[in-house]
Length: 435
Image (cartoon, rainbow, N blue to C red; front, top):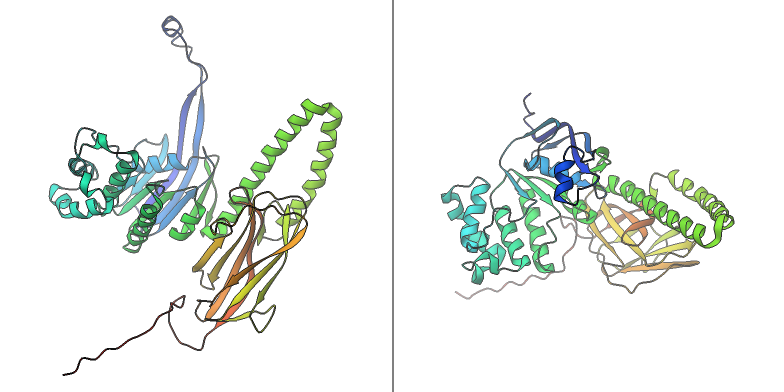
């Protein structure tokens, strides 16, 4: 069956099982006597995955540990093969999965660049042309002729990353590799990813960082228990995924609380816990009624006000002028290590800006009772257009408490006719030479 011309990857009904052995014979005698009795169970990791990726598209695979997303990437790389189903790929593939898998410890960094790039299918002439770029990107110029066994793990990974992204691949597969090196090098890697995408390379990325996926990917595929649970625009899929993870965390915490209560207080205390759980269970049901809001609702956003210096609670802001967002909340129970976040989107879906109180390094705080959080924006840099804003209260590493999509819509007006998304403060200076 031929591929569609517009596609780079086509995956049809992939299934994959692994054998998980229940016990291992401890002695050689036991291994010999009972070699046929090794008990194992077939663990179905993927149960009929199908998806297509268009040429030049960037797709993120998300899901909790063990869901099958990394297995999917290894199948695409042909590190392992499916039990059934088909995978078709069109073009040269480069993978950042097993970084430096082809490196030899006794060879120099320079020699390893040649052997590793050859694994990706480059000729010596092609590697010669890219060598300086690879070394410069890795920032390992002074160590490049030392044996790789003398490298730190960070140096090793930087060299491997530099090779993998400089092979001019048609399809790039990445598994949690954007955590390479220090913060400056990570930023350089991420910017390089953007350049690669802009050049038309197809990217499939596995990451636990939903923010990275939202910035880089056109589409998210959520894999749950070996099946695709949801796919679509990252901003639409991720709140559902975060909500699911919050429910899982809450369920596990509730189970732990019940076990502790059973041990400490006996059956009577357990019944009281169950009654309390039933009362609490009534509240999240209200959240589902609004498809724009997700979270465990331990606290909720009660109102949002957008203010200018000359007008309160407005829906029009002026480019270059100060503005503020006042988020009022009510906590139904204590929310520990809470965080507030905002995301600004243009009406065509462009993600203009996003931040939260963790990124901005505010001191940890808990939410109790009622209150408000105010975000002040100096000299609003957005250009004229229609925008919306997501507002979120989160806790404990991004678990949504009240994630409110499209919480407010607003217009930005400007007296100027600049182009783009944002205004950059600047000056012009002309200097003429006489004669």
